[in-house]
Length: 272
Picture (tube, rainbow, N blue to C red):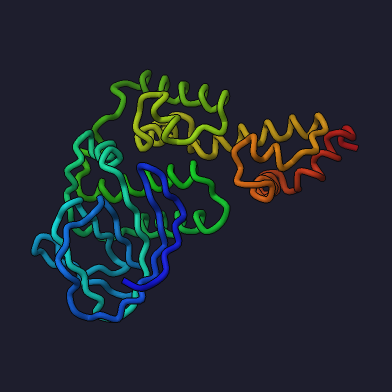
């Protein structure tokens, strides 16, 4: 299949890519087993799919959920198309489906909420979102899609009580305070919850996403260090888990309206 693929997130448990397929083949592709658990979200064009003999039309009004090992074929009746691809590991799928990785394969019709969440995910991926934020957003989006197919299974696995939910959120806050550069997967393992359930519970308890909370912690450390006169901004960016100094600068400017250098001057001069 010819075309371009831009990968935004590639971790052991989750993969996010923007695909522009240049295929002009109208006929069916060779029959093959699906190599992954995945979501295919067509944004432009039309795909026709066969999965275990069942035909689907894939366009911008639907999300195709593919199951590892199902026999698939695809065709491009209108020529080249563009789609978002989300690939999930078997453990991640199990986390989203109450411990059972058996995917209820099929087509999910897109609601306005899903359409907006899809575009916001891509928007953040194309800008300066880091792996932690993209992993959280991707998990939340995938869970919303699966909830359309199997709502009871997605809802399972919640902590049994309000106290348990608060404890999970507090544990996550303690880890993030000590290790603001920890990844979402590592954080989830430490507190003993799947990334999706942790994100959902944390937001419900605190009113904030994990990514936003971590950004506030990092900003607090940046302000403290700038007040102390820190001049190695590239080193500070690495220390706090930013991609580079420019990434940190954009984050700081977005949060407080000025770059780190100007903030340092302001803070070390006593606000004069």
